[in-house]
Length: 102
Image 1: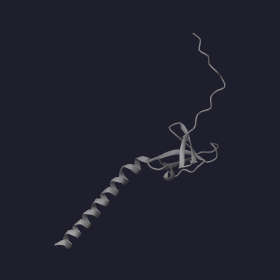
Image 2: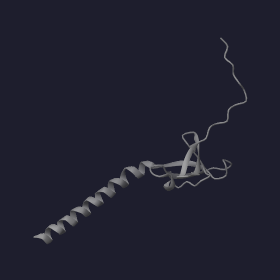
Image 3: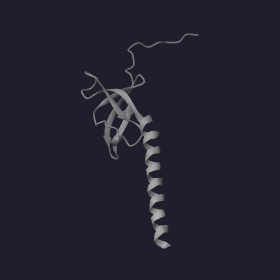
């Protein structure tokens, strides 16, 4: 009797593990893959690449020093004390100052 229960528990565990892996593959990872323009030379040339934004930046496929563009905004990948980080790049301010008059 005890051997049959152990075999059932093994089969049940295996089934649950396969179910969890299938759900993970179908939901999280597919939604986290995005196509972005990536530059490794400071923005001179751009290539399209699929990157993973669903987990750690270290697992995204990006490297320190690269710039990527997503939704019209540019981001720089930096290496910091805690690994890779992403910093949004600001557009340069124009030289003109606009004064408001009342």
